Amino acid sequence: MSMTSSACSIRKMVCYQSMRTDKVLEGDTRCIRERLLLDAIEGERRLFIRSDDLDAAWSLFTPLLKEIEEKKRIPEYYPYGSRGPVGAHYLAAKHKVQWGNISPDQ
Image (tube, rainbow, N blue to C red; front, top):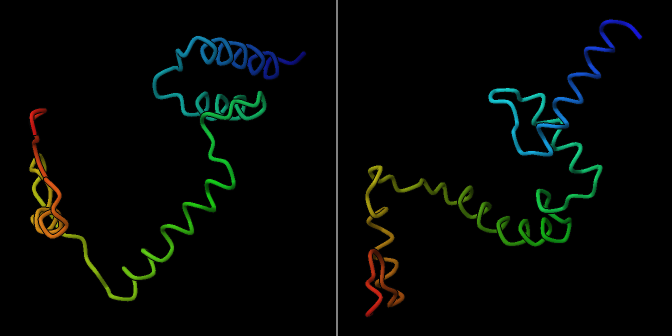
């Protein structure tokens, strides 16, 4: 066994061990990619979207994205930490929906 292949084997063992204990090395993106591939191989489905879910998402968002593109709509900006864009309040009022902080009594 060469020095390089032995180093790779050790790295894989360390990475695999850290994956199983959820101790991914900080800043080690190669280990994160290895973890994702290993999860796919082992059949871990929680991290992946099913094809029928993906189709449903595209059928929902494609018309919306098309309208945004065709009508050249621009997002309404709002300050960080605020309650959101002013337009959201008008939209909520139009549909008789409360917006913002709501107490449990309401």
